[in-house]
Amino acid sequence: MKILTVIGARPQFIKAAAVSRKLREFYTEILVHTGQHYDKNMSDVFFDELSIPKPDYNLGVGSGSHAEQTGAMLVGIEKLLIKEKPDYLMTYGDTNSTLAAALAASKLHIPVVHIEAGLRSYNMLMPEEQNRVLCDHISSLLFCPTDTAVNNLAKEGITNGVYNVGDVMCDAVLYYSRNNINASNRERFSKLIPLFEKIDTVDKWYLATVHRAENTDGTEKVEEILSAFESFDYPVIFPVHPRTKPTVALLRKRHGYKNIIFCEPMGYLDMLYFTENAVKVVTDSGGLQKEAYILKTPCITVRPQTEWIETLEGNRNILSEPTKESILNAAFNTTVSPTVKTLYGNGDAADKIIEKLVK
Ligand code: UD1
Image (cartoon, rainbow, N blue to C red):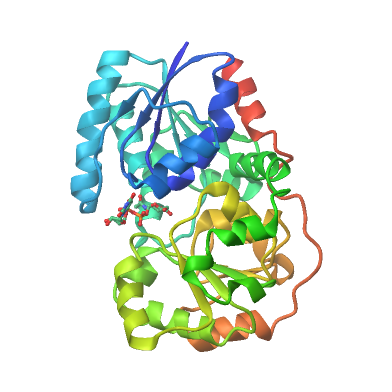
């Protein structure tokens, strides 16, 4: 049996790291990187750190409008599907790479396996929501991370080939945090020293990321978010996504922030370390909200809704508007329950996926 897997953006590398290792014990996997993310610290670092097999093909699609990016991927993936003739196409999550892969395969009648199926924000303005809804409706095997996701699919009439296997990102968090967190705090910080002269005195921090189109199109919301961080009681470590970089550069000139440690996007192992040891995380990322939950760090999500609604219980994750007032209110005026549940599985989602495939 031959499976062609398509990945392309940062979170998909992490998910594939959890699944590919096990998949290859049973199947031939052809790994295709669309090239959606291409910077060293958005792509290569994950392959190196997480020992993901080298892609068999890289389409080198790079940046562009949604249509340019998705269209180029569609054409490239179709050619590879015709050449490789896989039994299944496997894809992850909700990026433009996900949609292009599912669509190309479905038109060629190659069954699609969608991992992280059934998530919904019910905000169809988000490109990710469009991608995940469309992908789910043309998938044959849908591996969901939660019961909520299974129910979401049922509401849309999708019940065949649907399995709750737990979350493959949870597999990755548990596996890599066990093998990682021993590294010393000082060693991790040493990499950031040139960026923040007072770093030696920092022993508590917040961790923040902002990259969603809805927050980063225009400068206003980023300005509000950064102005909240200036008022935090400890420094805010802020790895800057390429999408947010030009706005951050502009705002730094304007405001010269003192309480924010700006740095390049981090590798996965550093992110786990800084997440687990942060006072709180502030983010608009889907993955980081959940990683914070699993690593028992309270989170503030700067979005109107979340697909990971279970994390909201007990204020472990709090939704916030992209305003200074709302973020400060979420960070300092709310009580967070100490209870963290096992919501996303025990780190064996990849095993369950392989089991189902073998059957
Ligand atoms: C994509 C996903 C999003 C996911 C995010 C994780 C879509 C629609 N969105 O968003 O769901 O949360 O990845 O990071 O697929 N850029 C670089 N170097 C890179 C990659 C991107 O400079 O290696 C810049 C480009 O200018 C590009 C911009 O970042 O135009 C946005 O990149 P893109 O891949 O279009 O979407 P993301 O915002 O990264």
